[in-house]
Each structure stands twice: as C-alpha cells, then as structure tokens.
Amino acid sequence: MAPSTRAPRAILFDAGNTLIRIDYAAIAGALAGQGRVRDPAAIEDAELRARVRLDPHLAPGRSTESGDIHAHYLRYVLEHLGVTVEAEVAAMERWRRDYNPPIGLWTRADPRAAAALTRARAAGLVVGVISNSNGTVRRTLEAHGLAAQVDFVIDSSEVGVEKPDPRIFALGLARGGVAASEAAYVGDLYSVDVLGARAAGLAAVLIDPRGYWGPRDCLLARDADHAVAILLGEPI
Image (cartoon, rainbow, N blue to C red; front, side, top):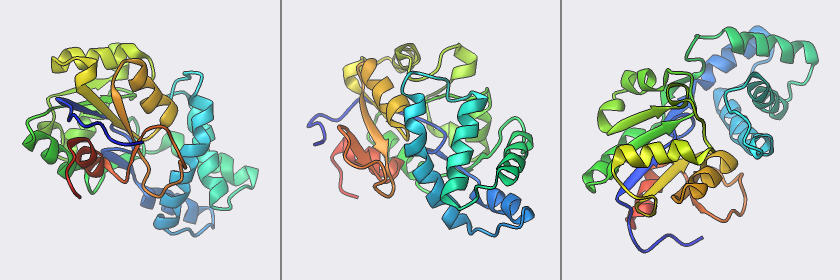
C-alpha cells in the first residue's frame, strides 16, 4: 500500500515488539535448562513467525494480556523451534509465568527505537506510546531512556481499556491534541494495532522485519525507525 502524501502531525507507537523487544537470550537459557540448545537468533525468528500465527486469536478483540493468549504465543514460538514435547512446553510455560515479574520478557530496547523517536521529534511531531500492558510500560521505557523522548505514555491497565478498542486510541489523540486524520500508529500486530488504529480513524504501519506477514492492506516497515521514515517520506 502506498504511503500517504501528507505527513502526520503525530506518530503513536506500540511498546512491546515495537520499541521494546523480548529478551531472546533469556528464553535460550531456559531452553538450555531443558536440554534444548537454541540460538537467540533462531528464537527471534521463531517469535516473529509466532506473531503472525497468534493474530487470528486476537481478531475478535480478545485481550492480549490474558493467560491463554500468552500460552498460545509461547507454544507457537516453541513449535517453530521444534520443541513440542508437552512436558517441555509446560515447563517453559511455568518458567515464563515466573520470570521477572511483573515486567516479564519485554526488557530490551529495540536497536532502532531511539532513532525512531529522535527522527519523529526532529520533525516536530507529537510522539506518544499506547500499549496493552500491566502497568509497567513506562518503567521499561524509562529504563532505556526512551520515556524522555515521548510526550505521553498510555498503559491499558491504567486507563481500563485495551487495543483494539478505539477508545484507547482516542485517549492518545486527546493527549496529543491532534485529530485522528493527523495521526499514525505503529505496531506489530495486524488485528490489534492496524485494525484498532483504523477503527479510531488513524493511519497505521505494521512492523514486519522479515516479510512474514505477507501481503497486507497497510504500510509495512522493518522497524520503528523505518516506519517513521515512511510516514515522513524520508529515505532510509
């Protein structure tokens, strides 16, 4: 899909898998404890594929923060890694539930996150974060110096509504002081981020580092910085 000819006044970002990445090395360590040696790069690739498989579970608007969704997500990652023995899958699920509460696995800044926020701010845009989270997203962004580069952070657990509900996007528009037609949203899940943003009247960009989403009726970007460049019509 061709980009709009008019740059937005605001770009709003998802947090998990957009600005903040999963700690793939932590998963590799847990798998090694089960006797399954997997490289973090292979785990990253499996996780990118798992997002696409997870998406149909989210299409009816189910909570991305529910236990069953997280269980599906992990199971798909493990399947792509060849880990299908039920006892091993159950052990990994127990490990995931107990790992680093309350933040969990999303603890690494995406390598292009700071560049994306810097590019957007240099263009004079309103920059915000809208995330389905458990109250920890601001803390995670602060830990990586990213919170200082955004105008506001909206965490679903704090406002009582989750993407893809248009109301959470409306909250972001109100905080940014912009109309829906003046804003774009960048996220990693089609049903939650793209369809949710569109339902609220925003343009949307889907993060797709390796083309696993296939043809989609929306803008696709390798990472958050690429997404900003596309929206601004800048080369990258």
